[in-house]
Length: 180
Image 1: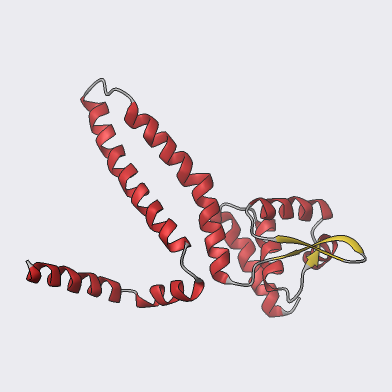
Image 2: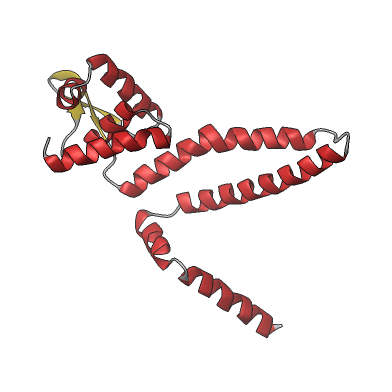
């Protein structure tokens, strides 16, 4: 590995624990992401100086998160792994997996809690707060669905607009009020 790649791989390993994955998985992903070609498990183990079993477990986790794709080459029985080249695709995949693993169970729990009969003032207060949280998460989920349908170029433009979107919304509100 070059010093540049080593620094990137090392950083992803350090950040892994903050993102909910272990150091090894973070480093494996980083190596695959910056590699100009698909890598097999033996190459990854040798490059990162990890045991083959650690690499296999890490690759399984990355496949479960849909962050790496399996490739086969004719005449070679080994499995090769590559990461999507488009950073937006990686972001979308991570966001969708987080939604499936974290947001959906939370929404399900909130729905169940809101269907319960509140037996006292404390439960009524708790349900009111949960209703607000449910509404916010639902709104974010609907927004996320809309965002997921946009192509990468449009997403990039939208992100680049930043506060300009707020100005546009203000202008639209003023225009609607003036029209009344």
